[in-house]
Length: 299
Image (cartoon, rainbow, N blue to C red; front, side):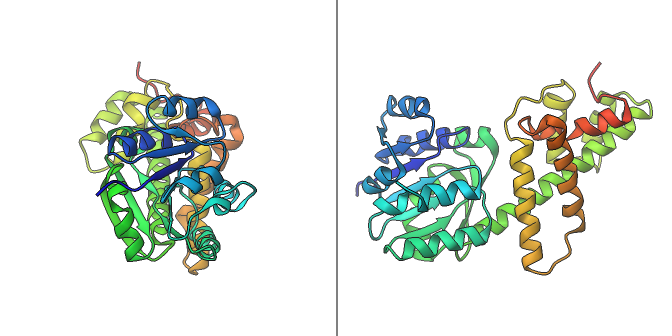
């Protein structure tokens, strides 16, 4: 059986490698993006270039999105020249964006009026996982839509989880992001305090890395980023701030206290407002370094 025709809108740091892996798996692919240079690049590797989201949807049975903000998803799907203007009855929008469950449900309802389907499928694993096709994909949607989209999902991810109805994938991803932010902010605070107290930052990191305080966020952010003063963005402060804000909104909707998440939202807002919003999330340490008068760097 030939692979379904796929589309991809949003060829950024995550979207571009995901789109290439979808093509490598044998899916004919049509692509669109706000910046045309990356469209030309992906087209040169075998995709078909489209001028608008509507044109992508006209040619695809599985329309993939990978966009930064909920407002971008609504604009690309529901706005002028949006996916909804070209979507075919029975087609599925596969939304890899990290957005709130309420936006997922709103978009799904609008697409249903056109006879089309929607699954939220946010991913975790960063740009490295996107390139290696080893992402974790958290899916919300009908079982039949999940089953149809599964071969495409398997072309970008290693662990594919069907979390429940539309919006459930978004909830799982946002809870992951709350923990990313809380763990990272805690690690940053501990490392600044220890450095200020006179301990060598590299020794401090290496000792904690072999002790019970270790975490994925310690390993991701300290040896190659903070200790080297490298804050080039792989995943930005602005994007994690957005994710934490959405996660806190879920807590409010469910009437659950989110004390730690509220605090960490302020920590990331502090980094954003200090001018580090477009830097990597590792830069969340920088305002505290400035306040403490120390830098957590390898000597």
